[in-house]
Image (cartoon, rainbow, N blue to C red):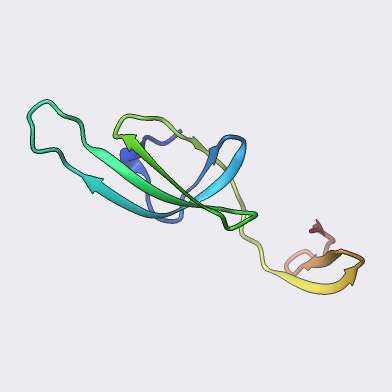
Length: 96
């Protein structure tokens, strides 16, 4: 589980049960002593591409999502769904 201060662009975390990718991080250092550094993070939902912004303190913990990037080939439409083939194993990874 990464802390907010360890986030980098491209990391994927879970927020409210959904997977979000970090798109931009704005670090705001306070001018007052004893104040905490805030991280304003802009996320993008992996499935819907909807944007989401959240401000976090440096020690706030986030749930990291483990994803694999694989190259796939589009095969054919199946009604409202689309069928893809895994280009490395030539298997049928699923319909989305």
